[in-house]
Amino acid sequence: MKVCVVSDSHDRASVLAQAVGEGRAAGAEAVIHCGDLIGAQTILAALEHGLPVHLIHGNNIGDAQATHGQARKSADAAARGAGGVLHYHGAEARLELGGRRIFVVHYDHYGYAMACTGEWDLVCCGHSHRAEARRVPDVKGGTSWLVNPGTVAGLAAPCTWVLADLAAMTFDVRELDPARSP
Image (cartoon, rainbow, N blue to C red; front, side, top):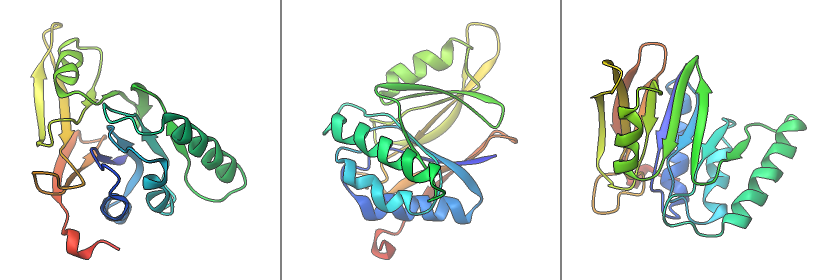
């Protein structure tokens, strides 16, 4: 299973939708958003690509009540066969996708700590606006993957996202050309 991992969209709906569209074209079956979406309307264009989106809020929460309401509307639309669905998890998410245990949190230092526990195959985080994918030694003598997709909004950094292949456990940091966003 492939997943589009994004973070720190900061109300930039067009680049978020562009990353999700590129992810879908590359075979992604779901989206993980590691926080700082801000406005609930920011996700709407990305949802048009029909992929389920797992979203946490980050430190720039925006209107959490509106985001939760948008998730309810999206779930209702999906139940009617109208495409993807938004899953709003709050501050963090515990997911199982493609047979992998995944923890999602906004803060990169918290993400590192969770990767060190050895409880997760993959920990996704954001906040730093620096894209990276690396193995982290854990307390159980193994390693866990820590993936930070950077900032899809391109704030003080390139516009980046990650295509994760959960079967192969490979993580490709991809850069967007914001001039091509819708």
